[in-house]
Image (cartoon, helix red, strand yellow):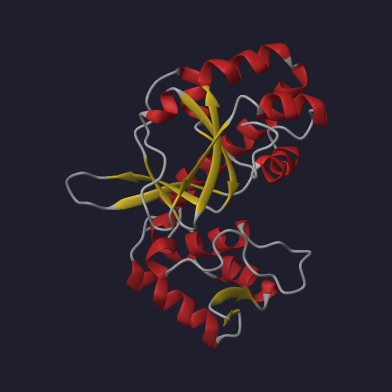
Length: 240
């Protein structure tokens, strides 16, 4: 991407804010950005092909992308990651060079930049400060997968849904609109906790009746965080 590109400034700002690149100085980021290529996908369309991520590393500039695993026999889906602006894809392929057999979907109009895997690996050797952000980011991704595995193995659907909402609730925001998942359908939320739409719909309707959440302009908002936390205390946690 060249500095005269209409997307250059926005992409540079996003790299500066990305948890992966935030430690690098502006001039280094400008030089790196010259190695990136800009690519877009339409909302609800299949996005990055897993075969591409063996050769390219992507950074999301704007929009959200869902990463799914699918059972080919039943068609059931599980969302293993929900990525937003500043996130990288695919960390796993970057580490082991193998295809990561997942399916991705653009939840919004999606803007990304990508550079070759070899280029990104060379940056990691050349710029130790990149590793100082990469390792905590990798740890965060591993922690999220561990939490997903724990929820699926040990907890019932109500507790899993509460955990999902809490993970995406910013406690310091007065409105407590959910981050990344605020406007997802009940079916999409179900895919994130290994459940089905009808079950998620029933729990959310109960939460609304109890004044715990509300829908504001088609966005889900946590209205009573204390009551939501109390759901975990009063509800049997262990999966039957």
